[in-house]
Length: 290
Image (cartoon, rainbow, N blue to C red; front, side, top):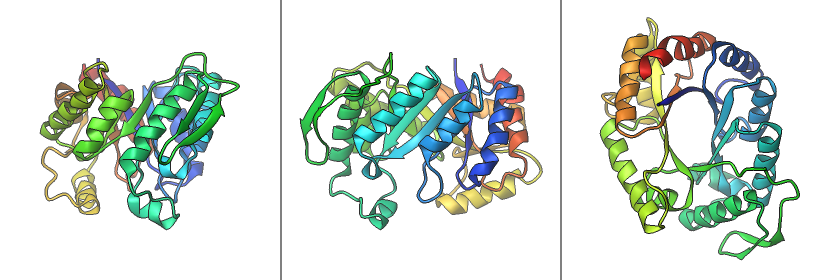
């Protein structure tokens, strides 16, 4: 069964979040995802607020840029959220946009090495282990969380290129794949993820969370053309979906058939009625997906 959710984009001010969370809870949205984009909004702070304002909503953060964050601090934050709101937190980490990392003097020579070391340490800390490691970028000396979660949550990771895909398949509990990925490209990405999992003797297939550009209403095509220009796509064919609930659900089924277990619909930044979009996802599109 495909999990369906939506994104609260950080292009909106943080004070808009509460009404979106309340609408998502009211409508029974399965998952609401948040971004930690430089220099807009914190993923952990917004996740904590969203979880506190809801009772059943699952909240994802995709993704936390690892060059910005000491791995022990990230582990403490995730463990705290998981203990306060068991089973309702989904966290993804990743390289972060390299231009942004350069702006804050956090860019590293080998993002792949950092992500591998970070994932290994983070997952071990969340399992309650005492971690000592002297890596190229991650160094911990006898670090143990005092309050590890009772059950370690999954840690997802974002990836785009082939080497990153293989790394995520071998080192994370699942992958987050960016919007604009066609069904054919998703199939190729999953093959790379599974190559990484196989090489690391880890379970296959690797679970995938996929963002999908989506818009509805009379200005949907016009707004999606703006997304095409913003993200630099040559064409929107197989990269986005616009239309009514039936059209969007059919597209979601196509991406699910290509291998996405979770599809998170990403509205345009200028979506005129985000609460209405959330309600449509939960009440109109969700019943048509499976």
